[in-house]
Image (cartoon, rainbow, N blue to C red; front, side, top):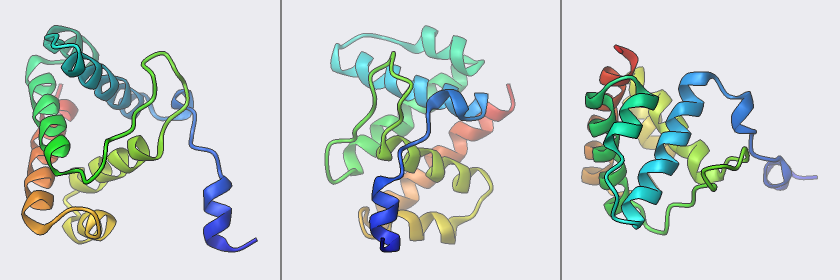
Length: 136
């Protein structure tokens, strides 16, 4: 089987197998998206998950920025589902690269989907989020 086809049949990781910091990010992302769709304020619940109100607010900024820049609908799993989606894993990879300041790898990851200015804005918003989240 070809390498590309092989990647297509590999299941996405179970959220329970991810490091706790990353699993909380995915669960918070899901909560933020559901709250946005239902016009609810989820900041206090996000703050509980992420450790601070600042981290919660900064995640909401990232979600909004990504929402405007993403070329298609961003697909997340149901809040109660342990299965992750390709978009959630891509989001985690973006966070991993931005958190360590690896702008070239981050750009390479999404350069075909997102234009330069939007990529830069998302990168800086993610950096602000990770600074707040990792320092709680």
